[in-house]
Length: 70
Image (cartoon, rainbow, N blue to C red; front, side, top):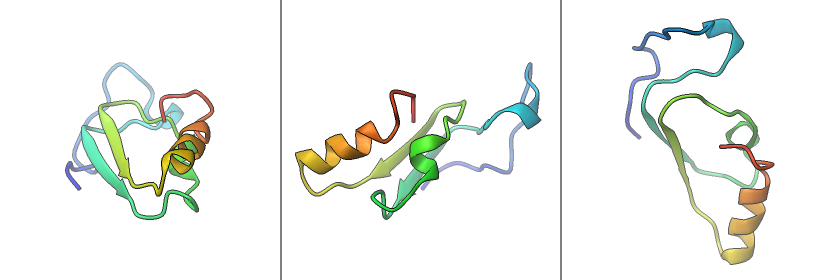
């Protein structure tokens, strides 16, 4: 949705040992079937917009993150 994941520098960390991203706003069109959006904890101001059908689905999607920042 917004941001440029190919145009940034990682400073003070090993770029091969993390999921570093610049400021990004992403969209997940199918959060029920998606996997990485729920499991990869990206470092940086990164947010993903994903829809849900009802409160139960929202809770289920939240729980897929396992308590991490994803």
